[in-house]
Length: 303
Length: 113
Image 1 (spheres, rainbow over the protein chains, first blue to last red):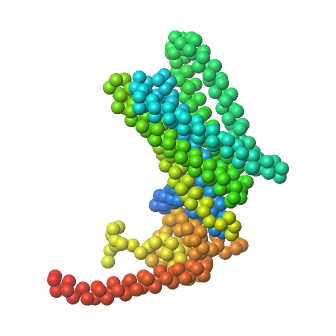
Image 2 (image 1 turned 30 degrees about the vertical axis):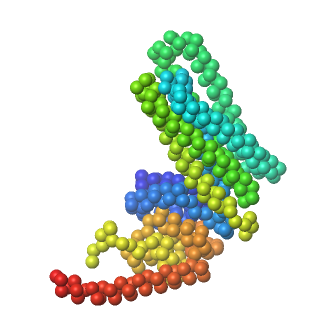
Image 3 (image 1 turned 90 degrees about the horizontal axis):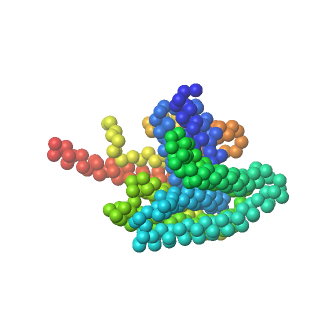
């Protein structure tokens, strides 16, 4: 198989699941029949981008609206997971240990951001658990393993992550006790590798939780009226993510202003700015998706 | 006359797909071939299926049941026929008006040059 054909297969597989289910076979067949030039690969890549940014849903009007609410729920869930990671990274950069510039307006913004993250997490976890029960119980009763397994996966993933985090915490405690030995070569490299690997595992676990929840929701084919509830919660979570983004931006701006008095160093600056960029981007993504989802909530509940 | 990239375009992919289906049901590959032959525009696969998805979601075209899912044919719906007729009538009016204006303008331009 030529490199171009491999690339085009990857691009066809990159379309959103709903688009792939409806048009994937036809699109793959067209690409094969065409002996498509490289120009078609660019066209496919642009098509993938458009399909993700402005998804089109087929079927009857109510089914189109149902699919819109489902997409909003899963998109905001993914955005919330990313915002949690960004909040952790931001806290590590500015508050562990606390930067000298973290006082006054910067500290107020940081504290507000922390409260917002915690409140949003509490609301999402509480509402998410109640919603999860409405998916998992019917799936278990109907012995639908295709729904139950991905619905249970986030709990399993969080359990594994907690276990790994516990081991890393023990390792970190060992480093603190034997700091001079642990930071010497080659143990220093091992320490850095373990911490970087833990960071990577954390990102993979968050992505795994969001992805498996999305798969369970898609397979369960939850009805429109129940998805209105999850979309409403997604709207609230989006407000939380947006408030977190605003607080992070204000805090970072105040820290950067205080740089002359040791507010933030280059490493912490890059780390905290990176996490702020992530949370601003996911807030924008969640915002667009939530507006579209809340718009689709209006109207009759039946065809 | 050679076309340049900045020329205004009437080649909206959705309109081209509907224009192709006005000739009868077709699958994706047949639509691409038909549009190339009739207009000289080559629709890429991403553009074509993006347009098909939007038209189908708006109820302007529909897939025909049965057959090979890899070569599913589409046809215009009644609503699609109405919308295409309106679009073409609007384009026809615009084309006729543009031609009349050009006819009046041409002697003036020739006189100026």
